[in-house]
Length: 254
Ligand code: 13P
Image (cartoon, rainbow, N blue to C red; front, side):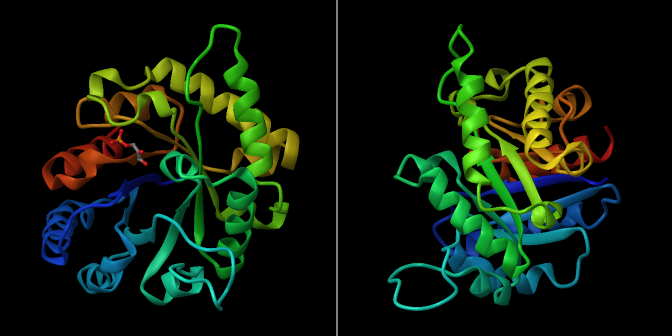
């Protein structure tokens, strides 16, 4: 299975010109990769411009950071999965902790996930605990978050689901402050166990598990090598083409 490295640009950059500059920088490295799938998730508004730069590069794709659960209609300010597809997106990130902090519930994430999967988007469902308590309550929290966020998802859709584990406490820091590869490995196994309980082992083991939270050039290689994950979801370091390219090369050469 190819490693999947996803760039979550969040609400950056401020201009289309800058978005194009970043993507052009990343593209130089991305098109040379053989074992790594690169997905750029910019704000919706840049998708159409960036689609033109991506062209037909097989291992470089576009995605969105959110989508609505209805197909069309009177939903002011929302963007449908179909619109994302028509603008060149083939992936979507759902349930990011920064959206959950604004009120997005597991129920909403589940509804959005279903519509996106029906539309044919590869759907990255984000999960992650706020804190790690000594009693291990975070494990119960994560179990429930996975079950509830996938509540509406039947097994037949699972092949287009990707789980991104992003412990909230590890987001937005220096790469020395990310979770350790050993702990990430433990969590990857735990997430597969929960998925196996819902969908059976064979289907569950085929679901890619990504890690996100302060990934940079300094730790990407170790996380891929020893973290037992199938890829990475990268935030602030994905806005710097040189740093992001370093992460891509670590995944390619691990
Ligand atoms: P950072 O890489 O900035 O920690 O962000 C992680 C993240 O939230 C990606 O979705």
